[in-house]
Amino acid sequence: MYQSNIRSLLWTLLFLGSTNWGCAQSDTQVEKSKTFKMMENNNQTNQSISKNIDTATFAAGCFWCVEAQFKELKGVISVTSGFSGGYVANPSYKEVCTGMTGHAEACNIVYDPNLISYDQLLAAFFVAHDPTQLNRQGNDVGTQYRSAIFYHDAEQEKLAHYYIQKLNEEKAYPNPIVTEVTAYAEFYKAEDSHQDYFANNGGQPYCQLVIKPEVDKFKKVFKDKLK
Image (cartoon, rainbow, N blue to C red; front, side, top):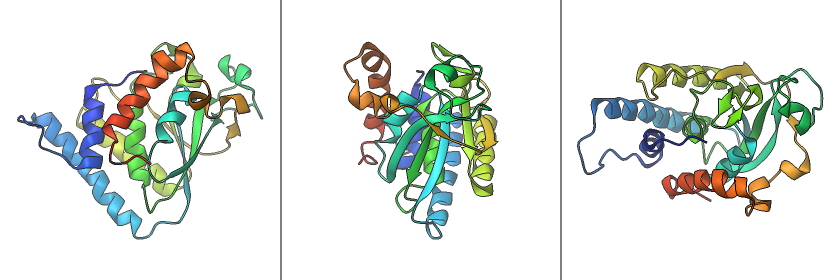
């Protein structure tokens, strides 16, 4: 999976509030800082009226990697790997992998808004994968690996569109964001063998070569926001 230095910078700007990198920032970096500062300010406002528990549903490529990353964040209560956005009831992993069910590999993220906001989860989503790749992430190709936000209410929809627009305007990525923003309709939990996949299969080649490097980068940037 793709992980650029730019996205690590964006994540750090939001969560650590740092603008001192030991060298002069470019104009583009300053604009990115402004955008993610708006995320942080909006988070502070939202926290005052937050509920105790909420849910975010994201598709960002292989759900094994997405689950492993989001589970590390303070305020995230649980992450479930499954499928959303399709038209076949109760699909199996094998069926989804054919690309014929319309589903995306997705994660249901249950979180405490008093500890982490939807804005911050969106920031994590946009830095945890490459949202400019259409129907793929790296070598994982197909609509089941598409980038998607399945919003649960009007506020989540508004925030998703707002930040996509801002990131595109400020050219945070070399190419336009192609993330699909769709109303949450259903979520089918994947088979048990896909839950906690990285934790249970860390020695396998895919985990070592693909997932572990992504999780290590994620944890390094998030050192002050981990459980």
